[in-house]
Image 1 (cartoon, rainbow, N blue to C red):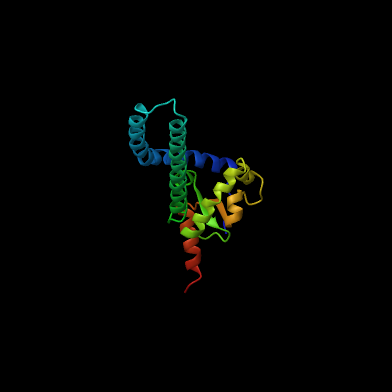
Image 2: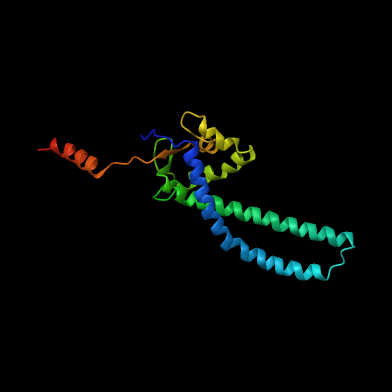
Length: 178
């Protein structure tokens, strides 16, 4: 099994790349929704009596509802992006692929969608620990963050075999046959 674990800084760069990609996806999904809500909100507030505390409370409630919806939608996009990509044939998000990293289970095998989903839901716990759950990857033996430990996953550097090494290994395995 590959024991070349990906450390904190490689994972950090990968998450920056993925953050840019997720930001683009969210722009195309969330901005139209916010625009539609905002147009209705502006037309309502222009005729609202702002001296009435009930109107102000309703406006604050509406803003909080939109913010909560945005957060939930944003989390869904992130969890689905990471889960689909990490359980795909590539076993990595675009950011991880750019750095030659893959996500595996503890035996080095590909994740199924369920295990990838659990891993990414557990990232919420890593976020709520003031990101200490992520920083743990710099200090654990297998470079696992909190969500990796909970889900039983590893982030490893891909084993790269040059074409010459692959040919050599193939010739060695065939040389014993007669």
